[in-house]
Length: 72
Image (cartoon, rainbow, N blue to C red; front, side, top):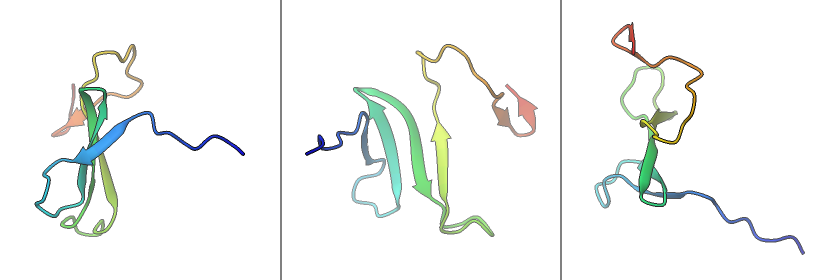
């Protein structure tokens, strides 16, 4: 019998008890991102949005971050 899958990261509600489908991911105590169900964007309602936070242990960024039309 194969071993049972054990997730590496922990996910918990970003705003516990408030209802929206919004979860934050943690590696130990370090938050690395959020995933949330889009309920407001025209044409994207029902799709999941992924937001990555700045992660100190990332060695190289392969894509620039674009905010308000500017690369940062």
